[in-house]
Length: 527
Image (tube, rainbow, N blue to C red; front, side):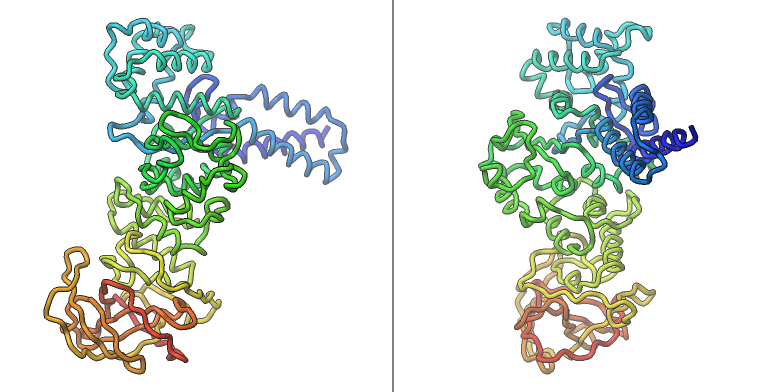
């Protein structure tokens, strides 16, 4: 009897741990088309849990045997994962707006009858956006709990019927509602009981829930049973490169995180020729079309990373390059959308602007010794000239670097932010200005750059396009010693004024012949 109680306790612990740690905060249930908070998921199918526990207890096996308990734990994890399986949506937001959390919450007040009445009112109805459909269906829903929907699949069926009967103009105006119905219908065919989509399942009125959602989104996409991608600008594989989905910041992790993914074009037709329930995230020779070869060329991401991505800072610079051509509506989001890919903690603070990209790079530097992170072009961060203004400053390196791993406890391989700037060990060489061209020869944003000839001690002459160098008391070239191949190395230009040191913007990477032996690094504090 005591051991049976222990088994029940163990089963409940496994179930609760999965629900609290593997699921999004809110899911939309396809059984009753209502938002369900994570903490209430267990109550949503409590009779199934009770039956599962009863069946487990009744099975043969000595609960005192450790192997029996281990097998039961594994089986329970598999069972609860299947019970709470959810499909997740990836799409390009509409310029006209999307259904919000507040809109989706209205399903609580809807009935199948309300939608049926709305369908019958077609000659007189006036729906200009998806939210209008919900508002008008609510007005057609009789009062009283007995009229509320008990059969969510019935509501979904009548929603599909409503979409099918819409005029072309109504469908254009209500694209947000139409694609929600298409997404839910496909999710059912994948055997999912729940769905999640970013616009309708995040309560943005709660700062705590918004922050958890942003920081957990990579794992939510990874834990989903299937990620359904709607490429609204794609008719077929040949037009893939023109789809705006590949230009958005948040869709980068939505591409890399899921284990199972399925691509659909603008008419909700499958992009790959494989069956509906076949995973698109497999090699092209299995798909029999060059899907991932095309995506790799569009995104610049190697195919092995596309198919088998592991989050972490080991590929931090590559992730910044992948994000460099992408845009986000909010400035901060270009940093926040990389949190999951890099597996780093970063607090969410909308309103901080470009400080977010600075903090992201600081977090990377604290975890990863890679001087390639200083090999960027463009404007520096307003908070430290060694760091880039944002991911848009990063591009593929002109040489294949050899990264030296950090040696624990080795002071020479550590970076530290201090009140004097970034403390960094650098192999430096003195510089003399030989001549300066008079004409303007380039720009970085609003800054005029001038081409100048420099002599670097021991390393010879170089020409750089940079800002006015005459304002500095002295100059140094600092070798990025990790960013080297057998022949060449990359470097940066430092300027000193009144004992203060800053990095000088150059239009192109400074590429030098690699010295036979680098100078012993010295500490510089770069502001």
